[in-house]
Length: 294
Image 1: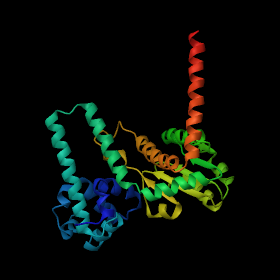
Image 2 (image 1 turned 90 degrees about the vertical axis):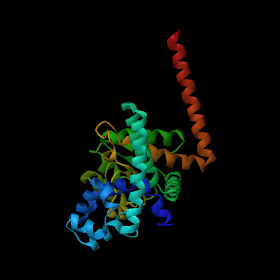
Image 3 (image 1 turned 180 degrees about the vertical axis):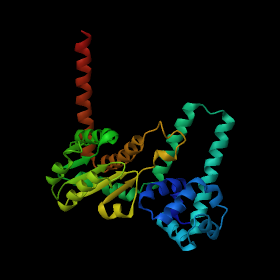
Image 4 (image 1 turned 45 degrees about the horizontal axis):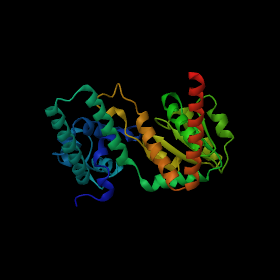
């Protein structure tokens, strides 16, 4: 084997991982990142000296960059990047020969984002997050703008399983809600990045109050690992061909559903509560439809 199991899981997510970390790179690391993103095919056939020269950095900087995105060094980084390039080229050739429709390109973009997000998921962290949800006295889900839709979905799914959950999607009231959180509570942040001023402030209030913290976000950073107990990174639509028309929300929903599946799988009581409540909702809807028809 040319690379270990951890690196192998990142094969389909090399570029996504780089993009997710961009806001935390140094100036030199950003130069390397941009070069890799836009010249990946050249990188896989280049030496570390050549990459350093192209990016006006040093060999040591290139090696540090590779380690920062999760690899042992430049060689193992190149292997993973080459694997990803081959995979993408094969996909493109297959689609070209099949005369791919516009609908098919959007579908392909979402599938690629899904594959990249899956590669970034850690099953053990998901299990631990599910346990934290189950044992929390109250779950507060902080989100805003378009990701608020995901927070509302998460709130509904937790409530229907009999858990106490509240979605906080108005950024004006986040600080006040965070000030009332307790050490037995769980704060979940579903946001593009936690490093926005208001989100960062809210998160730190939750930390000061002693709450456990989970983050589902598109942008990773070394600082994020120090801030939260459970971290989930999603692939960003920027890597997609039709990025202007796509939404990152599907990736947030996917990660949430994975965590929720672990939650229900590990607790028969919660599964039964969910099924019972769903049955009541369905019966109520059927009665409403019946009365409306007559």
